[in-house]
Length: 148
Image 1 (cartoon, helix red, strand yellow):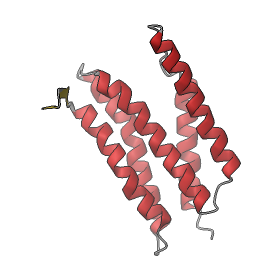
Image 2: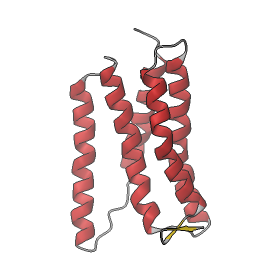
Image 3: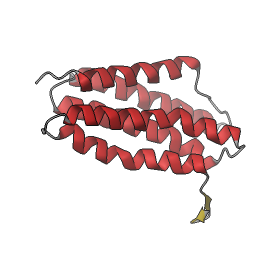
């Protein structure tokens, strides 16, 4: 399918779906009905798990697109940032921790943007992937810890 001149591959659809899941996650995260924190954790896990899935599908099908290269890291940052801000709002995470993590993301994105303007591509390292997995595990741990 082509929308607005953009080829919509399965991987791109998964990435865009991850972005659309974020408001649903936030609704459950900030709700106060029984087990809402567990439902938020499940939604977060589903959204986070699609991160590796869309990249794998794009590479396996040889359907890597510029849209995917742009949207995938954006979707990751939106998901993690929304979770951190939501947890700060709930008083479950220090704002200093969230600021440090989000600032690091801005700095790395800035470096990548400058590199790209010079024609260089800075691929994600395994350290970056480890950082993402660690953040996901930490966020899920906070979500399922049912303290007030």
